[in-house]
Amino acid sequence: MPSMNPELLASWSYAQTQVHEKEHVALVRERSADLGVRCIDPAGRSMLQVICSLRQPRNLVEIGPGVGVASLAMLEVLGPESTLTAIESNLEHANAMRQSLREAGVPSAHARIINERAENVLSRLADHAYDLVLIDAGAELLLEYVADAKRLVGPRGVIIINNAFDEHRLSKPAVRRPSTVATRDALRLLREDPKIQTHLLPSEQGLFVASVLPAARVR
Ligand SMILES: C[S@@+](CC[C@H](N)C(=O)[O-])C[C@H]1O[C@@H](n2cnc3c(N)ncnc32)[C@H](O)[C@@H]1O
Image 1 (cartoon, rainbow, N blue to C red):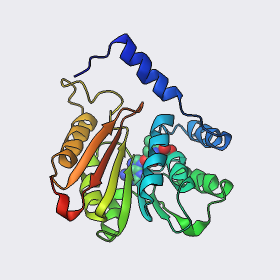
Image 2: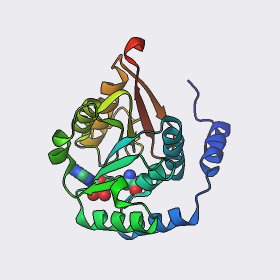
Image 3: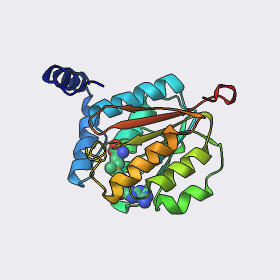
Image 4: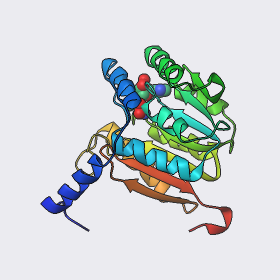
């Protein structure tokens, strides 16, 4: 296992700076900051776009979209046949996200914002009807969200958890905060599933990617 020597740290930092965001992204980031919403970091956003451009998911669910930095990143690289269902509990954030989508010219038919708590909505969404579920809504209910996400995605579906480092507490075994324990348990639930291939990508916040294998390829 590599230790974090200065050269490795320099290479990691260099990789984080190789992402160049356009001006419209900065505006949505500013809107998030004004409302005190932590949004996905630039490397995580960029990885999300690569995953979406490779997989081209048609039906997406986002749990905790905030003001829409990650939502717009995904929609930007997807065709008009893709539809996002975004579940946001905070009305102010949901309204700010609506504004971000309007400004980006996203037709309302391509993004449905549900202003409710995700735990009250997910059970109403159909099994195996989605290709990608992105989770970034705090860790306390993460295990519940992951269990729902596994039910929602079909074969070859993708489940992504942002802030998987739990503010850099994940790697510290002595930390037993509820959010850290929930994150560890949720990542383990996905990692130990023989039908799922996973990887924890080292963006700034940690982007955990889980891909459901085709039926014949169970590990
Ligand atoms: C960290 S922000 C998400 C940022 C977003 N991924 C981005 O890149 O812009 C988390 C969001 O989850 C929302 N949230 C928290 N608990 C929630 C819940 N139980 N159901 C739905 N949304 C929730 C918060 O209101 C907040 O807007």
